[in-house]
Image (cartoon, rainbow, N blue to C red; front, side, top):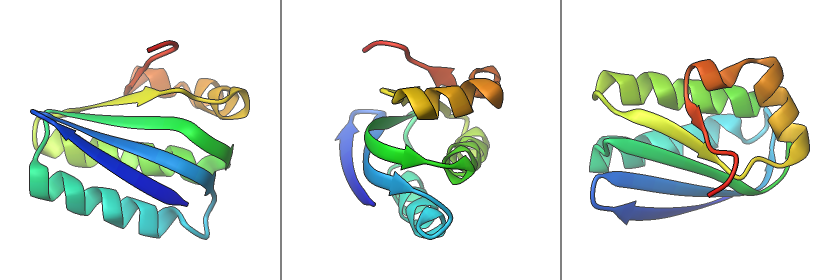
Length: 104
């Protein structure tokens, strides 16, 4: 799993690439949390355009970051979900908790 961060004013974008599973989830969460605490963005944008596989660990990563962003009065937006990931997000009704952009 590779992460690329882009800081834009009060936004922090994280571009995820590779596979998200329970083997990498803790490290991904820890890295994103560090950047959130350092930059304190108003909006965290999680771009899943480079994710080739995701299990429920991806949901845990998003929901954990949502909780952290809530604690600093921020929000989370998810972009570019591949079809399998989109189905997981829909089944979990994640769009009730974070903004899911269909097209950007």
